[in-house]
Length: 84
Image 1 (tube, rainbow, N blue to C red):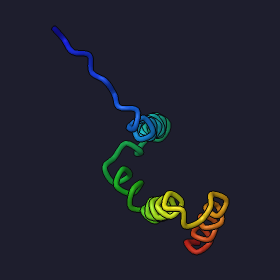
Image 2 (image 1 turned 120 degrees about the vertical axis):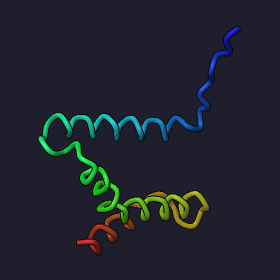
Image 3 (image 1 turned 180 degrees about the horizontal axis):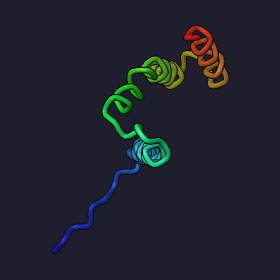
Image 4 (image 1 turned 60 degrees about the vertical axis):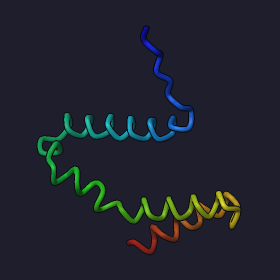
């Protein structure tokens, strides 16, 4: 008998994020001639690494109760201004 595979509910946000990334990358690859290259794929992560670090840090602070939720956009805005 085949057992039915269950997808844990806690992985749904991660799976949705991966699905959106794949769809957006596919649209870019279809729309632009040289988009589907290893260099562009690596640059997507390299050029936006500071956003990932800021998002993880802000998420940890919010989940630990250090600041309330409305403070997160303020931190994000400061990070974007600092980057430019």
